[in-house]
Length: 475
View 1 (cartoon, one colour):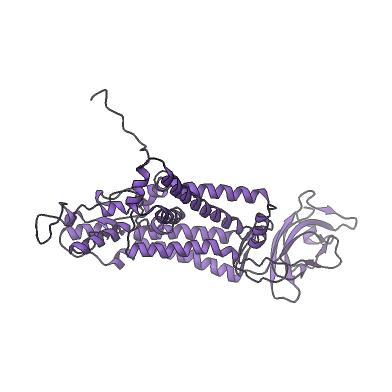
View 2 (tube, helix red, strand yellow):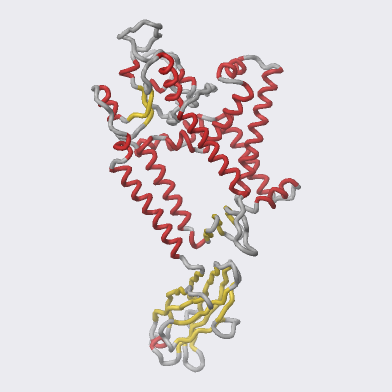
């Protein structure tokens, strides 16, 4: 081995990629999905939803001040965070499901990095032209034209980044109010800081880093193999049909020549800058643009489509042997994907059941430990408890507190006459409550006794309870 041999480099300096415009089914699908997802992201904070007086009318709102999440008719309180956890679990299982069936379709069509990069490339193409024009501009020395076009492109990128950061903060407070405060420079510094941070990251990730984020920053390409098997449909090049490559001459049929004419169309449209003909690669996001480009070329030269297309490893073996590939549905519906679907649907059904069965009131009870009990002058034993009452109605409600099935234990509420306490609309109340066991009763004599406190709402059918322990004298 020569001592002058260069060591292998683990990181390659980025070469700018200028994808060429392409038309086709996958490109059309990407346009529609990009428009849909960007529309949802930018418009959702402005949708209004009437929840009654003294309640926010923003349809989707993460209210950090009151620690609640509003989603149209659904309101999630902090103690109901399991709904959010369930949705995250569904998102994760859904990602496993789609990856198992169709490879990295999330990366190619719905990942925010892909969506905003697509938008930035669209702006770049609009300002500078298609691939060849952008290449010429990149290689030419700095001059008036290059400065003007780059300045225009960067300004538009910056405005998109500003809109992206601005839309994000609107999810956390009333959007029209915050927009007025931002415009009059009276908003909280956190809002300006968040917008500045997201504007900067969107500008850099979508404009300059692009595929580098996917290759070096995202862990998903490295763990997707665990979600895929030989029946996963992913983008592949049919080399047994395309090789050997070479130019085709009009009117001349060469049986030794493959269908691939080495036009580089698949490479030129790839946003990751890879050559799919080299086989499966970590950088491939399965966006399908190489399929559109190759199909267009095959149509022009009169060859069958799908030289590049979605294919499973099992299909490759079958096609090489001259057999027909399996049905797409046999690839999609197989034991692994069925299991993922069942788990995903099960979590979703469980969340829906929990949502429809939940009541509009909630309570928690905790005994006061210091002291555990107090013996009164008449020999009775009293315990103190802190009860948290939540009223999720839009109007104030009276909560009625009782002790279940034990007449020897009485309940009193600190600072309140009787056993009724009022809780405001959409509020929670922390209340001190005392349970007293008469002298000589089992609860007063025993060391500990289970006790259940019931809470009901006057005029409503909602009724809940909380279990706790009553501490006696222990005789």
